[in-house]
Image (cartoon, rainbow, N blue to C red; front, top):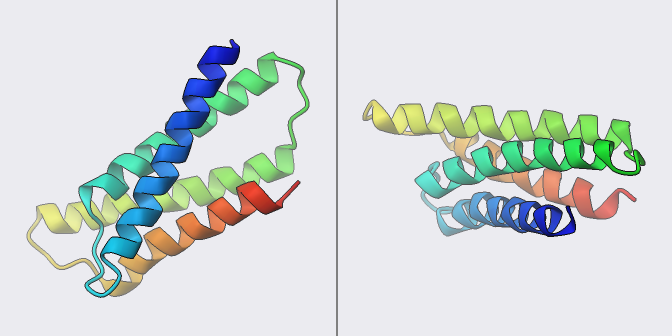
Length: 116
């Protein structure tokens, strides 16, 4: 179980890096790139799996923090989904949507690290 948890944490951090890094890389010409989309999927799936594993373990889970993180993850996922759909349809991604994806990821990272 410890190894699986470590792998999930690793993938969760990579997802956050993909979203945030993709945002910074495209800051001057805002868009939602494919790595931000993959990162959003990774964050949502690995986050849910990590909470499930924590619940199966010792059960010491801060449900309020998990709820806030889940709402942020869903927001990032929806923003990335809408951005990718715009690109797939040949439309320009609105600046607010692109910055919303990366900015919400930054907030989620801050919540994860600073909320103890």
